[in-house]
Image (tube, rainbow over all chains, first blue to last red; front, side, top):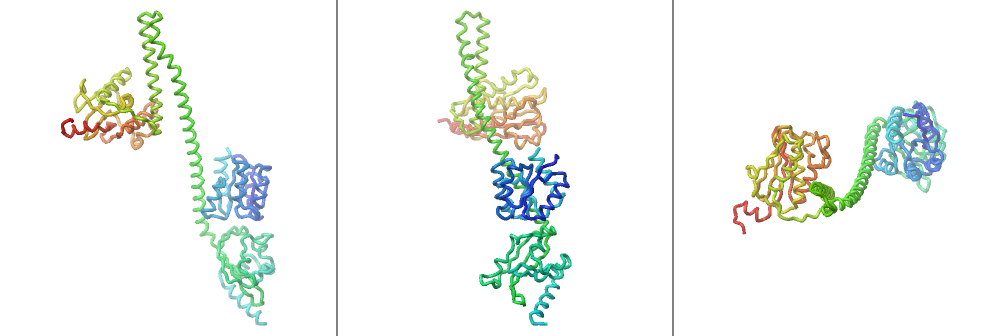
Length: 125
Length: 390
């Protein structure tokens, strides 16, 4: 798999730090981080990353609304939810919003690699 | 030691012996007042620090903080207890948090939170939730593919309809002109060739019309115009035409009526469309001939069976087991280089349009029988039952 450009969206600095390290250890490049959904939706058209990892619960705008907004401007956007919400309705809402993958925390590097490979293989080849 | 200090000390001692993490925070300042031994051993003494900074490394109060619900308008404990699950980014672990407010012995209103590590339990739940998400994603993908497929089918049908219409237009000349050619001084050989040209044009027109019929049969828009059709005569004609192909010369087709070789005058009459019946029986006989090993005979047996006319086409050779259950489905074919998988499918549609049905019998080892049943007209069925004709 070719190295991907990735935008990380999460309101937790700790999670961002961990995600950035794992993503870069996997050979990809974090090109942007956003700490809430609104910032992510605003920045996406300018950054145009290959892939977005998106938290759900964030201040200002949640990850599901941000996913909808990003999909509205780019229906080919590849967004993977990285969240602590495993409830069925939340999963369905995210997928209906356009998410291409769903990873539950805690995220370990092997799990992240597996999901990135699967999503990239399906949508970014 | 003052009373309140003694009381605090007792509370702290109690909290210290509980084998789960407990912290106590001043609801007004969010400063940690006390952290029990379980937490102290893991996180150090956090007393005096802001709870969100010390426990969650968050510069702002947490989004999930329940303090506003734990304190009434009067600033006193509301008496409510909140129990919820939370993932802590700091140590990558899941906790069940039980939170309640109370009056601390020194008079401050505090929240105490008991955190039970449920990471192992959540791992199982999360794997299940991820599998559920994966399934939902696959369903969405399938649904999209299905929509695309349906759109492609609609588009193909549209193109087919246009193509059929466009193909028929030049046939006007091919069919209409040959009968006029003798008037332009053709010799006998020329007349014969012109007639062959006309026949070829008519055959092509019939084929195009049949293709259109298949579409109408599939979509349920075929309007049957029934007349009397003698299935014996149609079967004989179909058998004759299929075996006229020299490639199948070594696979004879025998047509039987009530167990005897069919002869002129034999009749098994239904109400139907002759061309549609002919096309259907040709398909079944052609399939049987193609599937039969060289040198083996194919039989077409016609008979009455109660209120139905039955045509059974039998050949040597077996339909592969994996396709028996979907033998009459569209595009199902096996072992034929140029098979389209439409023969049995269109035959089934045609017999269904006549109010009949079709079945595959692969129970006899080494042989295959495809049978179609047509409803007999009421009079014929009554005759079969032994009653005199009216």
